[in-house]
Image (cartoon, rainbow, N blue to C red; front, side, top):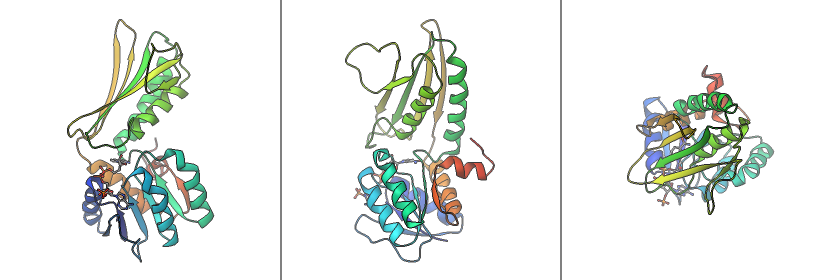
Length: 238
Ligand SMILES: NC(=O)c1ccc[n+]([C@@H]2O[C@H](COP(=O)([O-])OP(=O)(O)OC[C@H]3O[C@@H](n4cnc5c(N)ncnc54)[C@H](OP(=O)(O)O)[C@@H]3O)[C@@H](O)[C@H]2O)c1
């Protein structure tokens, strides 16, 4: 399958390698390039402010689209409307790692259990490389939503503080340093002890593989989906 790789940065190069390994034909698309003709799907790892225009170009070319770029959730409704109006297909996820999607499930179960024990304050801490443009990460936002939905006493995520946490709040914070690929910690601290859950990405390959699996999956479908729909079909229900 001919696949447009939109964005030729760190993730774009990793996606190119995985596409070749899986027998596809990647076509690399830089910032100034038009969407290439004849591509069944495009995979986008660019920057938040480029996503809507890139989706429009892919729809005009009748290509399905996979968006791995993070930081554009404020425009998610607009993108959904565009894709549905055009009869197109799109998969988007803040994290295309299978392991992270399993981590979501573990955190969901832990958060439900801990919700009955209000002494245990939840928090989310994420760490990424110094070049990452958004904070907190899309993955940290998803983890925060899972904690918010668990029904515990602290069910409101906050990302900055100018006074102590209120009784219903928990903190989501970020570190930016060096070359950290991506690490997410969910903690529950009672004051007397702490329960820690952590996911560490060791390379970008896992993200790239997930995005390519999503491209293969969406090529023959219409609608707007998350990575959970892809994994469910592949037998990895999350
Ligand atoms: N979903 C996931 O699993 C996952 C995993 C890792 C990263 N990400 C996200 O993926 C995005 C990219 O990450 P990265 O580490 O690959 O960043 P990166 O190394 O900075 O690469 C981004 C590339 O996109 C290019 N670009 C920007 N606008 C473009 C446009 N309109 N058309 C084509 N190319 C364009 C940039 O070119 P210039 O240098 O000229 O701006 C750059 O080469 C980020 O939002 C990151 O958070 C998601």
